[in-house]
Image (cartoon, rainbow, N blue to C red; front, side):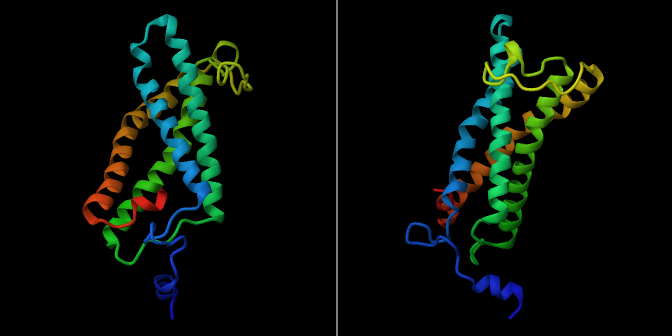
Length: 195
């Protein structure tokens, strides 16, 4: 029996009547569902900052940057957990093209959850606004200043940060639509794996 056959015949972890296609571990579910509202808050605040009155703008920056760093922390912990606690294997009935699409979206989202906050954090520092004083993390935790003001670097970092920021809602929509498609159209257990 080769590895492919062994994987295909291995029992799916977490399978029960409610989860016919297995399920993610409880910590993985917590990481996922804690990230959701933070992403909504981060994306929304990031997209509206430029339209906010000057007197409130600083508060939006603090909110946006703080949620970004929390997302970075959660995503890093989630990846660490995933290394030692891999998700259940895809069920046999899932077509190859859907497995590839799911893997591509998941890998892209994981990459963005790490890269996007880092780009924003270093861009903010390069613009001369480290998370200190009025712009402290969560409004009261001063973080170390990593660099002096460097406008050229700041602009080089903020451009991909903005591009990813505009792309992220579409990726999340694809992820959500995929889950709904599996649940409503294919009627399989994909969505239930994370519930």
